[in-house]
Image 1: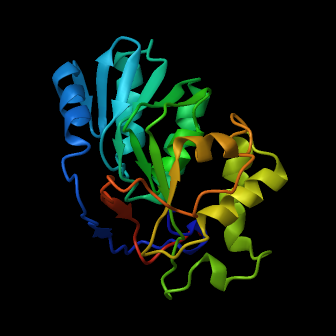
Image 2: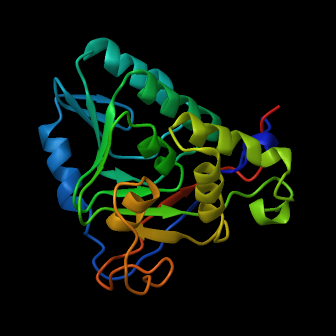
Length: 240
């Protein structure tokens, strides 16, 4: 989960962590396939054909302009394939990018083995239509502010939470759903991650019914998954 908007200042420190386990090449084939297919590149975006683009890297402050340039040159793009998406280095720009995706009416699609992590989850939610294939995965975690305080260190009604809930509402969640989703994303600390399988994320979107049997262990991943890189945001943070 990105660092809090309400604490962002001009000085930033970017922290990126690597979690390595077995299967370190897990995302390489999909990424290489996208690179081979790409007919144009705009920062972390790859144009696959006249109607499809892919997101394959971290977003940053330049990403909204790069996205706008891509749509200028390829105005018929209708789907953003989310292949390898570690997160963002600029939360304000990332949420602006999400609103641009929604305004353009572009669908988001996470293919099998696609990985959407940290701030990239907000971009997935921006899709006018959101599709998740079996085998996709997601990861969320808490934000942290310049004083080292995380979401759980603030009162539930603190103003610092409002921009996220407002964004989720814009992306189609009702008030209760937005608050529940926000609480879930902050249920693990900044330096940790909660992992969601395809079916779990579909349930958050109302696309799949709740399981009848016991729920899977929170944050569990299949044993053959590596824990890939998550782009953590700046530690000093927030919206004026």
